[in-house]
Length: 210
Image 1 (cartoon, rainbow, N blue to C red):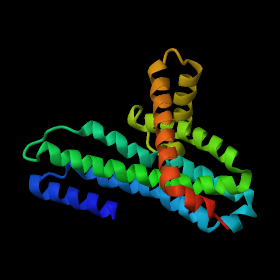
Image 2: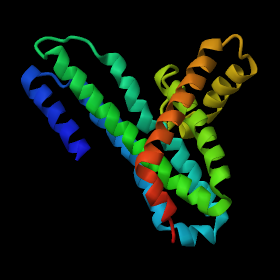
Image 3: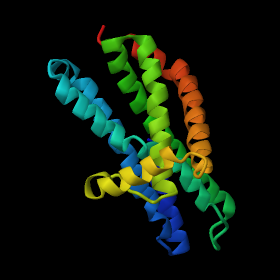
Image 4: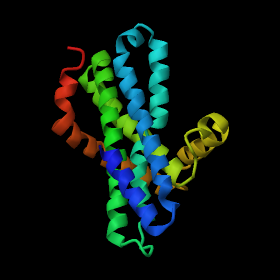
C-alpha cells in the first residue's frame, strides 16, 4: 500500500510539473524492495537452506549486499528544495513517503533475517549480528551516497571498492568524517530497529518456525 501511495504522489508531481526529474525515487524504492523479497525467500526456504549451510551463507551475503538500498532512500531527503510550480510541502510529503517506505522495507527485511539467525544461534547472537549488520549497512550507504558506488559495482569493480574501504579503515584520522557518519547512522538505525522490533515484529519473531 505504501508503495502505491508514493508512486501515486510521484505521478501527480510529474503530471502537474511536466517534469520527470524525480523518477529516480521509483528506482531507489524498487532497489529497497529487493532485500525484502530476498529475506522473505530465505525464510520461506529456511528448512532446505538449513541443510545446505554454504547455500544459506551465499543467500545471506547476497541479501546483505542489497540491504543498504532500503535505508538509503532516507538520504534522498537531501534533494528537498523548492522547485516551482510544485509546492515545497508537497515535495516534503513525497520524499518522506518514499523514505519511510524504504526504511520500513529494510526493517521488516532485517526482522526476517533476525528470525533465521536467532533460530540457528540464539537470541543474543542474533542481536549482536543485527549490530554488525547495521554497521555494514551504514558503510554501504556511505559508499553509495558519498562515494557514489552502486550495488552492482561490487561485481564489476570489486578491487576498486575494496581499495576505497580498506584505505579508509587503515587511515581513520584522515577519514574521520566517514567514520563519524557511519557510526552515528549505524547507532540511529539500530535504535530505530529496536523500537520497531519490540513494537511490531517481536510476536512474529517469537512464532518463527513454531
